[in-house]
Length: 128
Image (cartoon, rainbow, N blue to C red; front, side):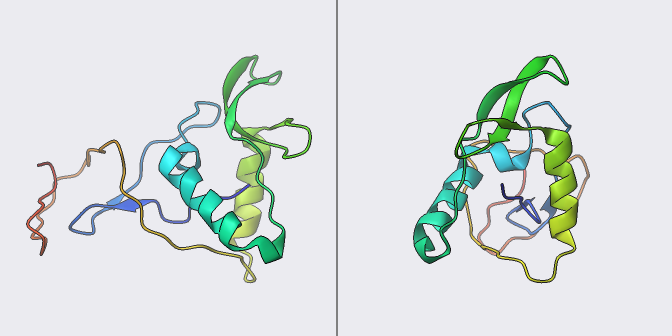
């Protein structure tokens, strides 16, 4: 399992926090670009013997529905969102974190719900 500390920023560095809800398959960690970044990190650090189970839709008895989830790399059992959220909070306050930093290009755009002025150096204004 992994989590994304600070999701995204626009070309003018406005922070973008996508809406997320438990059991709705919309966590930023499930975005293909993020999964690819995590997989590249794992591949680059074979010395750590990191394992990542498949991230895919699984059935949850708790919510009686299927949603995208982390799973065990050995048996493919679902890691329910409640337990993943709890683990994220534990890790967020850990001082000895294994971290990866990277830049991705989103394949889908987000819209900011707040008005703002931007003057980016690259002339790619938000909303264009």
